[in-house]
Image (cartoon, rainbow, N blue to C red):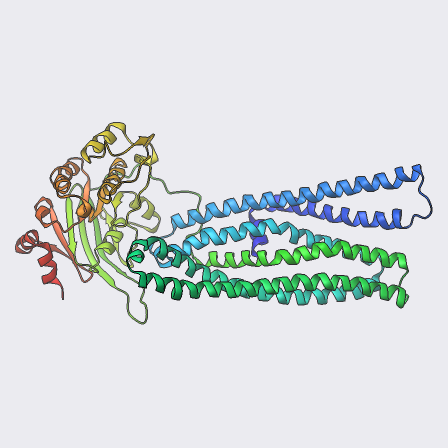
Length: 560
């Protein structure tokens, strides 16, 4: 299975050690049976004090050793499993961090959350049950070797019986895999429903018809699918366990029939055979019982593979020095979204744009014109499908994308509110710079900070955006991208932003690329750009004057 293969690849020698310990446990188990057969069953008459010392004491010691070794092997394998799951979760998160934004957007947050929660949890549970499967297999092999030594004819018939038992059991288990795979696919849909309930709670409170439709028609259909298939999976699982249990008891009856009824062996050998099968019965049932969780883990591995995330790399491509630059250019850059339902995806470009160090450029455009796509292309979150991005005339190569992105600090419209302030290269923010910006952004009396951590993030939307801007500024990046940043500010602070903050950015040499429709302040921009139907235009002369008087009218006029 994938689980064992991955564990062996990453923890080869510890895994080999655990396997050897499990083998020792199996050998000791068979040794206890052999001791019972040769030292206890064969004993006739009364047992004197000397016999107690030579039989019972060694037997108790052997059982105690078996207990210690068995427990040790199980704990060792379980501990190894949890170490592996810890590393698996860490590697998965790192791969998500390294994967291009466009791929993550295609997957959606529900799919990723299901993988980080359900899939990792399934692997964890499988590791808890893995010792049962491993020890079941090892004990079975050791028991077969012992039974072969006792009576090859009896073993042949017993082996056919057990093989038939396991064959039917594996067929039942294969049905478990089928239904578990469907439940895991349904998990993604349920997570999307959970997201809708949580993120759409305000709208659902206002529109009870929509809430009823979501619960009774959307969620309920997914929940019923999950319920029906998990019941079928459990049915086949229980059937496999009961089948194995009963057929192992039947094997004991067959052994006594062959030994006593047909004379294939004597009663002592039959009794030892039966004792061994009874000893083997519990590990086999446990192995069958562990199989569904291991199957679920295999399904989870399949789902993780389907994510098609970036390969794992330990490094974060940290940049000590971004280097000086004077011009940043987009040359013939194009990007097209994947098509859906037989329709071509929206295309942007070819785009040609040049930014000069320290200038302030504003961008306007209607909904769906391509503004956000341009912003993601400019910051390197989307990679051009054709054309190239240049820094001082040198094209950004595949290996340089992480370094290129780290020139930017950004506040997007759908920004995430972090709770820790970080300075350059991940260090602490400069105290003087932090205090200055706190006063300028009017947050000094709003925020409670402890060693760079924001303790109170219960802020209005406008204040949250100021906090996001504060975090971007103390990083001291070279280029600042603001996506409709002032839209949630009150009129007074909006004026402060354009008339006081923007000139300070220019003094500090920060290049600002701002998506904005605050036409009253367009005069402060060095250049004014417009996105229209995926194409980029620079507004000059009369067109800029018109946009500065009424940006909405400009967009309406330009729309088809």
